[in-house]
Amino acid sequence: MAMSCDSGLRTRHVEVRDTGGALQKPLVGVDVPFVVIVFASPDCPIANAIAPEIERLHKMTVDAGAAFYLVHARSDVTADTAQKHARKFAISAPILLDTDQSLAKELNATVTPEIVVVKTDQPTVEIIYQGLINNLYASLGNRRDQASEHYAREAIASAIVGQTVDPAYRKPLGCFIERAEP
Amino acid sequence: MLILGAIAAIGVEVGSVEWKHVRPIIEQHCLSCHHDGGPAPFALHDPESVALRARFIKEVTASGLMPPWIASEYGLPLQDERGLSDHEIGILAAWADNAHPMGDDLKPAKRPPESPAKDDVVVTMPETWTVPAEGKENWGRRDRDKWTFVLPIGNDDAIHVRGIQHYSTAPQVVHAVTYLADPTDASQWKDSRDDMFGTYMTGDIRDRPSGELGGTGVGHRKLRLPEGFHWDVPRGSDLAMEVHYRPLGRPLRLQDRIAFEVTADQNSRPLRTLISMVRWIDVASGASSTVEDQFVLEEDVQLVGITPRAMGTCTALRLTASLPHGEEVILFDAPDWDPHWRQTFLLEDVYELPLGTVIRGTWRIVNTEGNLRNPFVPIERLSMARRTGAVSILLHVAAEDPEADQRLQGWHRELMRSRMR
Image (cartoon, rainbow over all chains, first blue to last red):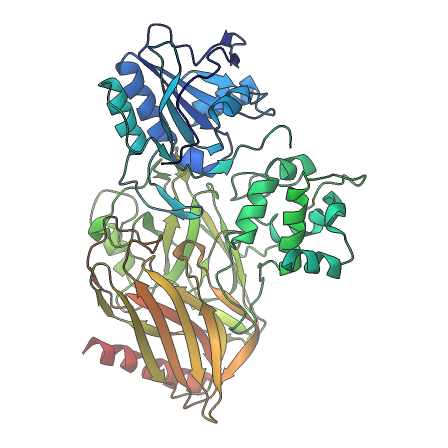
């Protein structure tokens, strides 16, 4: 299976600021077995439609003793914008502002919403799942009333019990993360 | 090649496409929705906002997803067409591919001015309703993410409505809305069957279809009939309003207002609704089927507008007319039907349909997983019936004079009764 999220060595020490201005290293899981990262965007309708599911995934992750981050990979999203967006959509997860897109580039994230589940209890960074959160959208513009397949929930459940995820990559669907440099 | 040729045709080299070439396309085709406070999730006024989404815009315009317009060019010319030409799609693609150069002209895109609405009679939802954050299954699993509201109009006299404008408190979630004027207590009765405000049932009243009074859609919240035509709202009516919505990921408060423009023209003629429909469809899981309906007009009428109604298992629909002298005319064609972009389509010019014309509706039903709009996952047998048609197309027509109008109504009542048998 061709994967954009090839597992193996990565720059674990990518630093991204949170909305309080503090530098975080999301790929270094301190005392957590895995880290869940969800790329979102304040005005992406596809990411926003999935906001309740993002919050459910956040709770599921935290309850399992792992770490969860919502990431905005856009230079124009300020801490204030991100916090307002989170309040509006009832998302309580910690937020990272990946303004230079270093984290998005490191993880090869391409759209919002896109989830990356990273195993962190070993010397190297291993992505155990990346991509689609669920099947709410059958394609761009074709949205179901409800999702019937919950890929991200299953991936996190697998991470909790230390199992692999198959497939480990599902092509995500959403709004492009426009690269800061062409 | 298409793109290169198209751009050459307007005298711009591919590498020279700048914001000044993109701006008029955005103004003409995008800003009716993508303005501040509009139904779209983001505004596209500033060149920077457009540049930020240049690749996304390229993709959704090239695929025909945006701007949403489900009617093909094979049908009769329609008002307010929103489709992009090939050369416009080419300009947007070239701009995105070349890292969206701005050039010197950075004027923001401006929404074209709209003619002011005449809000002669305004009705408001008597209570607020909360649009849920997420979709949920409704009764019967047939029509989901919709709700019907009853708004008392309280009109002491009949009113002749020429225009309808829908003002929404939640424009980003409200998609297709269809209206019906109900002078009976039937819609109130439907609403009173439980404690909830509004009902999950359709806005139809017996064999009268929701949409008799037209329907509005995303970016198309105003209907204005041609001069000399009106919709009848009998004395003491309620407005039954069937709202199809798309949850936004957070709950939103809905308390919409509907404004009627009333005509005082004594010679204005009422629009009546003829229905081309298939009352019952039954398609096995994984199967496809084309269903048809036809009837013969027993009166000369003028066709003013068309309101198609079908769910996501329908992938294409078409309305045709076989005129008495033998000519075949496609009245309306939606080859890639998407129920979320439906609305009433008013014709650019009123079209004459003489007595003896055969009206034929055709719907393609694709009950497979390959139909990405099929709301049922996993796929199941599709078996549904509705008095006003499991699939239907409403024709908004006017008769020549009051006597012909009476005959037209009597004939159509009989047609509907005959379909019940």
